[in-house]
Image: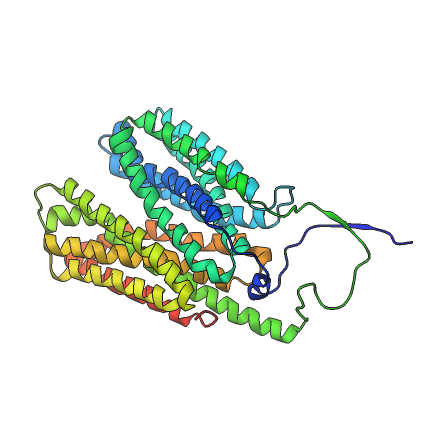
Length: 431
């Protein structure tokens, strides 16, 4: 008599190229729902970070607003750097009837809304920082779940297209959030409330339309021997060699993302001061809005076009390298020819470069992940490469500005961006 045993669900650790075989293409509807959820997440994250926290810091500490804002954003970046990998690792091992990722996207959006509500009701600097930490925890869970869904669900021939939409949503969220709190809902409390509503509502269509495998323990018969269901024969020596190669590719991809994001942070964080002190434009705020708008629109267009093009050509690395080079060219123009027309052209180059990078770099990362078992954890580690540069940029910029001014800062930025893009050429397992 055969005795059944209960075994836990385990994601297959086979190479991802094997897992892609037989995987159905995603539809336009799936991609649209994913883009909506991702846009809502980025809007809820970037709008407070770019606008509302600064207003709140000025309200609570008029004479120390810079220090309070720096503390809040620094603590938030640290929380993100730890929380995204942690939530990713936990989601890898989640056992539920709704799958591994959907529960964390749902719970994270509710927690993010709660944190934004705390920010809306903050009465001082402590409650402001606490609200931002809670919001960051929730948004980290959403980010971990959404990003891991791409390699979970999207076959390789579509990675560039879907990653292009995902990259576009970051810039779209920033643009829509800025318009939201500056034009449509200018009040601080109302702006936070609207962000909270969007954080929840935006993920609902995705959660309803994206179906995952039930990951609860299942009853199985006696253990079978022989080849794995995917036909992957065990070869310890070759597995060890492959793991070494994959680890190297992951390291190069991580370093590439870190440097390119650092370059973008150096360009954008000090652009207002550059326009004010170096170019001496008549209306720095309007000039900042113009250059930001140009950068965002160019980035969105580039992400959609280059992501799809990388799928058609079957090549990824050249686009990532070109993205870093384009950002470097824009920074070089700011350093060598400080004038308003060049600043606008630089915004175009930086936007095209960063949009290209955002789209295709995610496709590269998704292609080099070692197995489906730890997708969330591995992708979460790349969140550190995105969050850490936001903290490092001011520490690096201040002494450079003191020693060589904006020319020196943007020369350094050009080098960092170009080298960051070029490092992806060291990733050997991706064309």
